[in-house]
Image 1: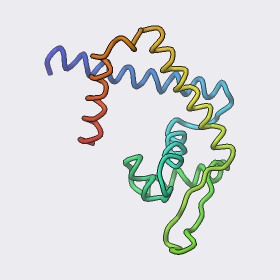
Image 2: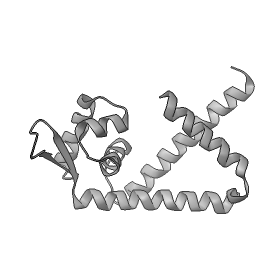
Image 3: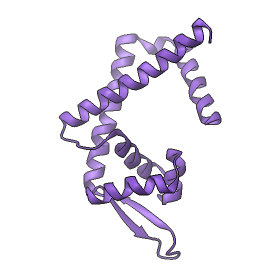
Length: 145
């Protein structure tokens, strides 16, 4: 890899890891005792329609078997309820509990505050090049992976 490619790689990995670390610390301070993986599962359940095991697994880009392990833990912790579809009993629907919704509000607030802070401190509203570049990076990852 060339110098520019190495630098982009290092920056992407560093920013990604920093965000996850900070997010986990803030959530723990607010009493949330879930891993970031568990929070992302809750978020995926909220954001897919209908919230079936298959749809959530696809959203997370994991197998249904991998998701089953996470869901089992989240059911035990009282964050998710499993329900069978009333028309097709083979389909498992996932439902968030009130506790999960509360955790996702904290998670969403973290992201809102982080983005507000980034825009304020770095004056990003004036930097169209960065925003366009991030959009291209996002599109690349959506189409390639």
